[in-house]
Amino acid sequence: MLDENRQKVKEAEEILRREEEERRKIEDIVVKERYSLDEFGNEIKDGKIKEAGKNLKEASINNAKGKGFKTDAELKSNEEYAKLADERETSLRALARHFGHGC
Image 1 (cartoon, rainbow, N blue to C red):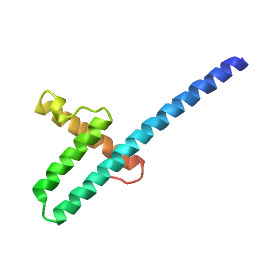
Image 2 (image 1 turned 180 degrees about the vertical axis):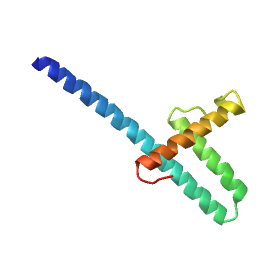
Image 3 (image 1 turned 90 degrees about the vertical axis):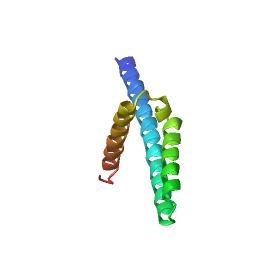
Image 4 (image 1 turned 135 degrees about the horizontal axis):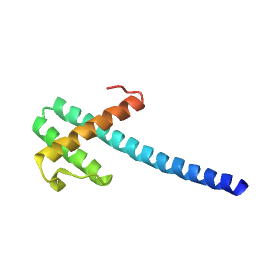
């Protein structure tokens, strides 16, 4: 009985550790995306609209690559890319709500 309980505690600790790692990864993505959006806003203010859009897209792709997500070059069609973008936006909104930033 005692060994069973110890095993359950170890399993629970491992689950918590993995969840914490996932939370950190997600927070890292959110921070990078926020930074990218801030930079985008600054470039817009400076009148560099075309460059700002290019840089935002590039930063977003690099953030995704760093976390193992597919990039637009790896997707097979515009429809699949649009679906991924919708899922990503939904996820980011859910994260923002979860961390108290509402969207």
